[in-house]
Length: 449
Ligand code: UD1
Ligand code: MG
Image (cartoon, rainbow, N blue to C red; front, side, top):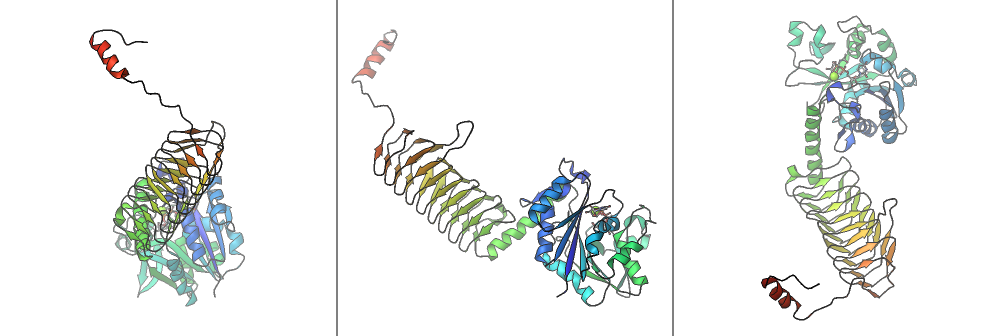
């Protein structure tokens, strides 16, 4: 097996994003673009990953550490071209790898298979391989100049002749290098061009001059779409969502209206999961086999057990753990709570910072009052309990196994197992009172005090 080093160029400022955030931290399917690229590099089997960031991009370095803790981070102090950026990682290049692949941090849709396909020409003796594509409008891209079917040069837009500008096959940006030749080639690149930049793309002509060949692998333009603006970010999102929907369907989930369901890159759905229309999955969701997510639900950071039913119009927030067969109905919000198997919270409730035992029924309009303005407090409810409609559970508080809470209660003290707790004012009936009131009012008199 040939060893692989991937260098991710992420020094771009992304001025066209009009953002205070570095471009590569903008998210596609809830995951920063640079992390998509890092994940593809690792999935392709990279033994080592290096990321080149711009000065003052501490936030990018932090995201790289989170997504790929082993990756080396280098700062390119001055933007002097793509070859100059790769050389910022000279230290890792010198470690010696069979293959070196350069990827861009703002090109989040590249698949690991494509990274490896690009390495194939190297195994066949090429010194360089380039990922080509045919954009609808080639303006601005480097053109792949071929002679007798062989790649002889990459010409940047600004340096291209009229004939070269007519070439439809363009450089997507991904390039692979023979690890034994890469430093020598990069050190031979000059900035003698119209942009006064060190172009990575000059590697093709340099390799040819050394008597080595350069290969081309073609990719679909969908896969190599780069993001320079919010419009392109939205386009990348749409392409990626289509991929995730397809993945969910191919994995055995039913999506009734796939185009209305939005996934995160890490959403996991089991088999026979049914997702009704207009559901949004934020990061960190796993849905086990046979569960149903009904229409208009918003689910993030949650685990939904086998056969559970969520929604319609439910909100699961981070830390929601739903056991097997749990029902969470309309206008119910669950946060940082464990619901044991068989629990039902069917209507209009908020359950936060709680644990609820098996088969407990939580009546409509129940609220866990978990926040005192300073801290969050926990509510513990046992198994087989029955929480009456419109109960307020003022945390910290515990309700025992099998206990009943009377409708409309405000529970501030613990309730023992099997007890009934009622915490509301007693009802008073005053016979004939309403008729007397109407008489006085119709006679023009004030109501009695
Ligand atoms: C580059 C390619 C071009 C290709 C196009 C695909 C070169 C010379 N040209 O052109 O052939 O068709 O990408 O999108 O490589 N970067 C740095 N430091 C630098 C310069 C660039 O980190 O000093 C990074 C950028 O952040 C970006 C990538 O390298 O991620 C490409 O740079 P960019 O300036 O966008 O190159 P293009 O002119 O688009
Ligand atoms: Mg570019």
